[in-house]
Image (cartoon, rainbow, N blue to C red; front, side):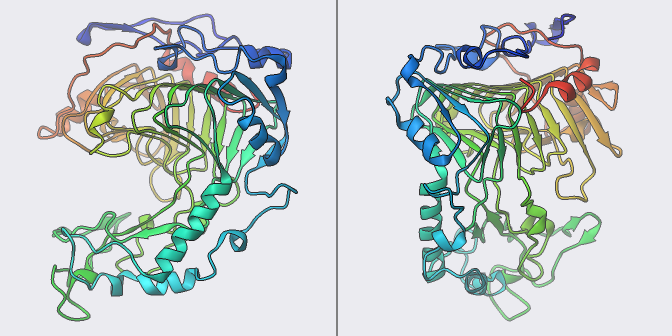
Length: 488
């Protein structure tokens, strides 16, 4: 752990805040039992607030378990209900296997009626979108193929998604612990969970859904330019008139996948530390768009992966620290919808000393929450590759973000304002200590100067726990050396 730290003053908002390493000192050579008993310290970000986060540290001897298969992990998670438990993960656990260890494929989950080629033919937007629009959008999918897809998806979900109970620590053993091809769910009021030192890979949705209304806009009048290519198609109008005129000539629609590697819905006091997240060997760039123009833009590729970590439905007091995210596009939502007004006053999340290594977007994307983003490293380049940098923090409805001492190492010319994405009026952010390719910048000041009609507001909260910050210049080297699984 670095000893030379800096406390940064934000006089503009009357705030003293900082960020620690978020966790006990690096425990090289520590006994396995010691790792399981470690808890989040009092200066460990938002997850230290409320009741604090101790996971299964108080587990009795009979509730300390080591697992190396899906069958063993399922049994361990169910053992003793919500009593404290420590689960050590050894080697690779594939959540898409049966109890004998055989890996399951699409054929094992698919409804007999489902066929991807038939699905594409049934819902080709150049045909489906000729129908009368519903509130300015094409109608939702219906019919035998969509019903069969849902049944297939339900069967896969029931097998590859594992529920994590309260008062649980899940700790990877050594440098090669992995959970792949599935998802951990922490939801429905579950609290006090610790997940550390595990590489998560490839939560692959075998049955993604085409949503014809996602991104669809009948009122588009400006050319649609993506990477210098004009994707605008003539003939876009609300009423169907002919093959060349009608709502089927308006661009829109997205493929949506179901699984995050870790999902928090209504969870509290969760600490995720020294983990890695990637799409593994099945990258989404391997699955291109399948419909014709104007439905073949880059963002309309078939998507088989959703987020790395999504935090929604009133979740609160979460810290994500010392973790590496790579070979992935949409990283993390804080707040799932503008209509979830019950999230106001919750969604308190810290992202501390993480390595966002060539991730595309949502690093994180925030609605409603009080989110502390500190001492993180962002790398990437201009759009043109699947996982190139699009933006870091996304500011959505009523977002309240504190950004401190983050470093961006980006190829290409980026203005400070381009490091974020502004989605909704009413969002607020305070930024200090940001480095863009080694030079100090102020993201908020630059954005507000360039966007007089879309101003970012000022936050009015302070972190619940005092934390210490590394100086910005030390962040790249420290994060590259310490973030990710196998480095605990």
